[in-house]
Image (tube, rainbow, N blue to C red; front, side):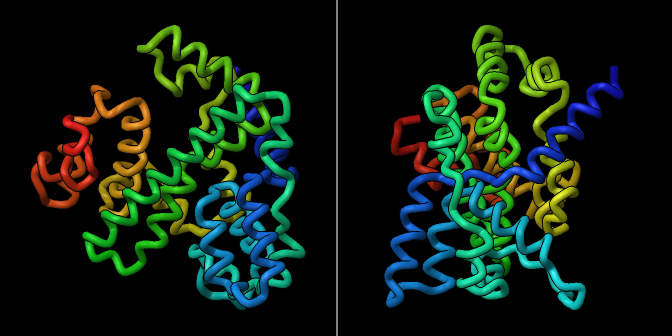
Length: 275
C-alpha cells in the first residue's frame, strides 16, 4: 500500500515537473503591458507584477535553478535578482506568462474560485510575513515574503491539474469539520500536499534557503516561525475574524514579536473589526 502511494506521489512530481505552470490572466496582461512600454520596463517593474502571483514566481525560480551555472556561488531567492541574472529579454522568451489558469480551468468556475481564494490567502500571508520580518530587523525580509507566498504552491498546482480531487477533499472537510486536511488528502490523493510540495522543491532544485523557510520541522528558527505564523493567520482569518483558532494565533504572534496579544490584534486590524 505504501509503495502504491509513493508511486502516485512520484507520478505527480514527474508530471508537474514537465508541465507548463499556469499563471493568472491579470499577471499575463500586466507583463504584456510592461513589455510594450519600454519607458516603464525594468527588472523592478516586472518583479512587482510577478510578486503577486505565486505560480509565476515559482515558474521563474524553477527555470533559473534548472539553468543555474556551476560557477554561480549564491542561490537567488528574490525575484528582482533572478530577473537581473536572467535578463528581461530571456525572461520573456524562456518564461512566458502562459498558459493561463483561467484557460486551464475553463468551465470549472468552482475550482477556479477555490484557486483564486488560495492565491489571495497566499498574498495575505506574504504581506503579514514581510511586515513582521521588518519589525524583527530581518535584513533579507524579501526571502521571508517569498517563502510565505509559495507555502501553498502545491495546493495551487493541484487545483489547476486535479480539480475533481481537490473538490472531493473540500467536500469531505465541509461535511466533517473535524477531518484533518492531511487525512482528507491522503484518502483522495494517496499523499499529502506537504509531501508533494517537499518533493517538488527537491526535484526543481529550488533554493535551499527557501525550502528551509517552508519547512515546519525548522519551526524553532525565528524566520521559519515567522512564515508559519503568517500562513496560519491568513488561513484562519480567511474563515472570518471570528474563527476559533485566531486567539491562539495572536498569542503565538505576540511571542514572536514580543508584544501582548491585544497589541497584535491592533497591528493586524482585528481590533477595528470589533473582535
